[in-house]
Length: 298
Image (cartoon, rainbow, N blue to C red; front, top):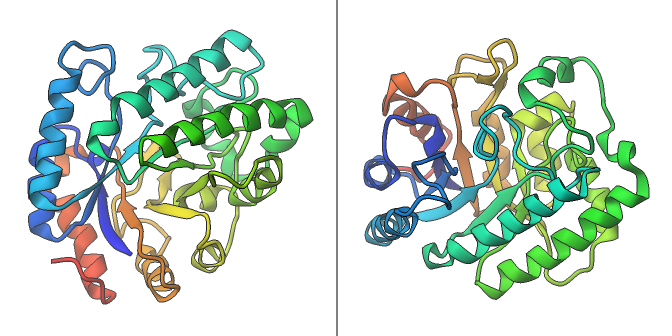
């Protein structure tokens, strides 16, 4: 895999600066999320920030992944983004239109992938349900039935074609309690989609842990035709964020080993949201895991 790091882990650092610093540490990819009034489609300085990110990425030969699952970006009162799977037609259309806008207006960044989640069928909040996801299987794919699947297939099929026309790939990140909640749900959803262009899978190992999808590395290694990137993280449900690297129960180094041995060469993106105060030491810890397990970082 290509070592990557998620910029949302370090909210006190701007993306162009982080790209330079992370490249020096040995990372070959970064993930960036929208942020209100910072990297924001609605801000008059959006294109200028994109130009700075693109210049830094080109100078340091770092691939960009855009992660559209940005808490509180769409609504300051609600952590979840607008939902493509919503039963409210107005909300699902807003989600579709915004995703299309991101695909079009970020094209000059030449992102390796744009990742997103489907959202919930009914209105909810990620922060309220995260802890309960550890103890029960919501089978979110079954909540909306065929109507939800048809709604998602039509919207995502069109968005995938739009992304392909700009030279990037759209990739779905399964999220607990969303319409597509697990990698297994993603595989079932493939049956509703056409084969061209293919929808990528942005696997989040923290979400796989919540969904009880084990062994994580072995399961992902069987999906090389769909896998676009892997988010390497472990949830901290008590605090609604990620664990710091090496502080949880998951062996991310083992996942790195299995995926590398499988031949997957896409980005493996380390994420530890909620610990920005630690600074670049977070990135050093992540690249240390890569080096310990024979990766090519640094």
